[in-house]
Length: 262
Image 1: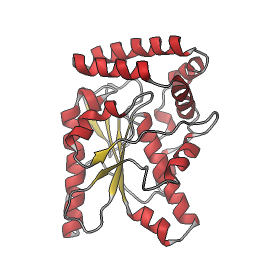
Image 2: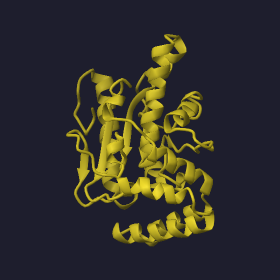
Image 3: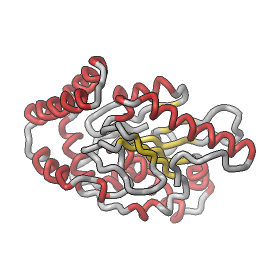
């Protein structure tokens, strides 16, 4: 699993605690001017050791993994899957085929499939983020978190966790990741070649990333930006249904159901 911008594994505790075989990737430090695709390629090159995943249940002969990302993490998950697909198209080796066979799907939580879902305001904010010193940037980030936590009805513990994470975050990492998002140029059709389904859940009232216009997305009417925290029960049950359907399909060879996949 991949956390959102400036966050770490703590942000995904509702999911990592619920799904026993999940883990959250600690992202490597991005270098200046590296694109989201290039950053994803660095991670994909170390597959499967460093790739984030939700493992399928026991009882399936061939164990596969789901890439799960929240917000920025979802965009990165899509890029990782695309980079692996590109590697496979360039090398028809047994190793690359094995990599492909291990990916069951990409799960997006409050994220985007296309640059069109990134608000213009974010690109303007990114220019400001690039110039702010760390102390001022963290202060602004804390104010945003307090407002988001209040708007989304988060618990005191969740708000404090986000504030602690913001305080401890690497501001250079945040700057570079924000630049990656601002310059992300993917269109939805870019991911038609990855060969695995994409599942998407989003809050209708999200103002940080525009709700998707695709018909196969699951929309939470009262959801805002951090639905993996504020609506963890709904999000976890949605993911659970995807995993259950996948397992049934593997065991019985049919289509068990649809939960916003492509």
